[in-house]
Image (cartoon, rainbow, N blue to C red):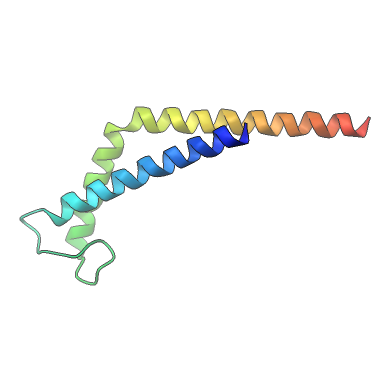
Length: 94
């Protein structure tokens, strides 16, 4: 169970990283903003950050079903693991 949960957590992190990288790449390629080396560069402005956040929210909105289903799956798996541990603890007390 834990392995499956870890796989789904990794899948969720990978998806979120992919969306972040896509939003950053699109922001860096925006012709209306000055060229930059990326989000953590010193030349990243408030305008870059606003554009990045807007793009990231649009990408998350587009992927909301996938994100939500993975988050629900992880929550169910965590609940199942906790229930298993509680059962084991109760049986150990007997």
